[in-house]
Amino acid sequence: MQFIRKMLKNEKGATAIEYGLIAALIAVAAIGAMTSLGSKLSNTFDNVSGNLK
Image (cartoon, rainbow, N blue to C red; front, side, top):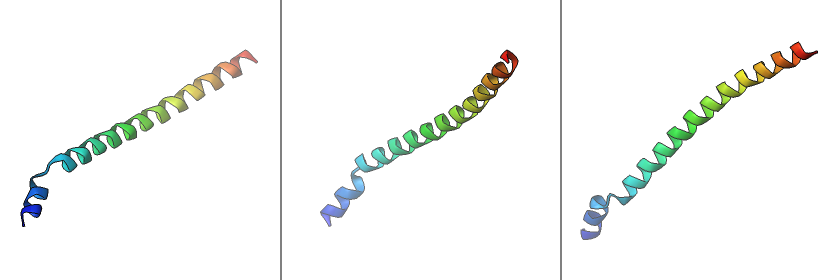
Protein backbone atom coordinates (compact mmCIF):
# COMPACT_ATOMS: atom_id res chain seq x y z
CA MET A 1 0.00 0.00 0.00
CA GLN A 2 2.86 2.36 0.77
CA PHE A 3 4.35 1.69 -2.66
CA ILE A 4 1.14 2.85 -4.35
CA ARG A 5 1.04 5.99 -2.22
CA LYS A 6 4.66 6.76 -3.14
CA MET A 7 3.86 6.31 -6.82
CA LEU A 8 0.86 8.66 -6.61
CA LYS A 9 2.91 11.34 -4.84
CA ASN A 10 5.84 11.03 -7.25
CA GLU A 11 5.61 13.92 -9.73
CA LYS A 12 8.83 13.27 -11.64
CA GLY A 13 7.03 11.25 -14.32
CA ALA A 14 4.40 13.93 -14.78
CA THR A 15 7.06 16.59 -15.21
CA ALA A 16 8.87 14.51 -17.82
CA ILE A 17 5.63 14.03 -19.74
CA GLU A 18 4.91 17.76 -19.62
CA TYR A 19 8.38 18.56 -20.99
CA GLY A 20 7.85 15.98 -23.73
CA LEU A 21 4.53 17.55 -24.71
CA ILE A 22 6.08 21.03 -24.77
CA ALA A 23 8.95 19.78 -26.96
CA ALA A 24 6.48 18.09 -29.33
CA LEU A 25 4.41 21.28 -29.60
CA ILE A 26 7.51 23.34 -30.37
CA ALA A 27 8.58 20.80 -33.00
CA VAL A 28 5.17 20.89 -34.70
CA ALA A 29 5.19 24.70 -34.73
CA ALA A 30 8.74 24.79 -36.11
CA ILE A 31 7.92 22.29 -38.87
CA GLY A 32 4.83 24.29 -39.85
CA ALA A 33 6.78 27.54 -39.97
CA MET A 34 9.64 26.00 -41.96
CA THR A 35 7.24 24.43 -44.45
CA SER A 36 5.46 27.73 -45.03
CA LEU A 37 8.69 29.69 -45.28
CA GLY A 38 10.27 27.05 -47.50
CA SER A 39 7.50 27.17 -50.08
CA LYS A 40 7.54 30.99 -50.15
CA LEU A 41 11.32 30.97 -50.52
CA SER A 42 11.10 28.42 -53.32
CA ASN A 43 8.58 30.59 -55.16
CA THR A 44 10.86 33.62 -54.75
CA PHE A 45 13.87 31.77 -56.19
CA ASP A 46 11.77 30.43 -59.07
CA ASN A 47 10.62 33.99 -59.80
CA VAL A 48 14.19 35.32 -59.74
CA SER A 49 15.39 32.46 -61.91
CA GLY A 50 12.63 33.10 -64.43
CA ASN A 51 13.49 36.79 -64.63
CA LEU A 52 17.19 36.09 -65.17
CA LYS A 53 16.53 34.01 -68.29
